[in-house]
Amino acid sequence: MTNNHAIVIGGSMAGLVVARILSDRFLTVTLIERDQFPEEAIPRKGTPQSRHIHVLLLQGQLILEKLFPGLRDQMIAAGAHLIDVAADMMWLNPAGWGVRFPSDISMLGFSRDLIDWKVRRRLAAINNIRFLQGSEVTGLLSNTDGTCVAGVSVRHHKQSHQGVCEEEQIHADLVMDATGRTSKAPQWLKAIGYQPPQETVINSFLGYGSRLYRLPSDFQADWKVVYLQAALPTHTRAAVLMPLEENRWILTKLASTCFHI
Image (cartoon, rainbow, N blue to C red; front, side, top):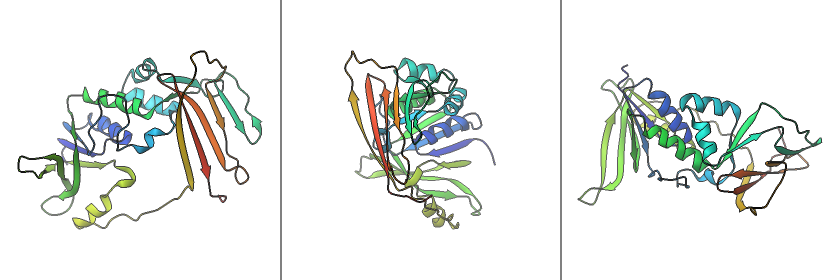
């Protein structure tokens, strides 16, 4: 195997991070995304979960800071909130309200759109990473003797002058699938003669909904986050209120219908 070209399918956070890691090991990395990436921190079709609450815990901060030095400060400068999880959080749990005290454990609060946008901009500045947007992978390519995956077939959503979508075969030394639960990798593998992996389905029986609020400019409190923890089986609902950039707050409510562990 050579390290000339790697392909990452999907521009999710997983796909963005994988592309960054592979850029240190391959001459060229192509990230293929069926959406067009927005030029600012706004939602896109491919990340419907972006409208709900997101945080970056301490270990996530350390990992991303190693891959993208200075990202944490850039996020804070753009409006992300640095939150001490012990001192800044009002936490109601089955034992009562949690004790608040200063700690060395922090998390960042922000919208998913902000971190995606910041990481995409950092990736775009890396010379050997190419974004192929508005393009959808339709299958895998195999090598001549059928012993390994050798690339992907791609359909570009932009139509040609004949009025049909253009298709292309892109060869690579490594193909990574980061399309998440919509992945068609099992069907693609089966189509080129491989046994697809066994699928395991775990239903969390968890539903959630979110809403954004803009608080009055004179609002003051000695906390940044309110967390109401569920306590199954009697209390099946939970909620989190957290600040975002642009003087916004997000409230995410969660409910479980499963009472068995």
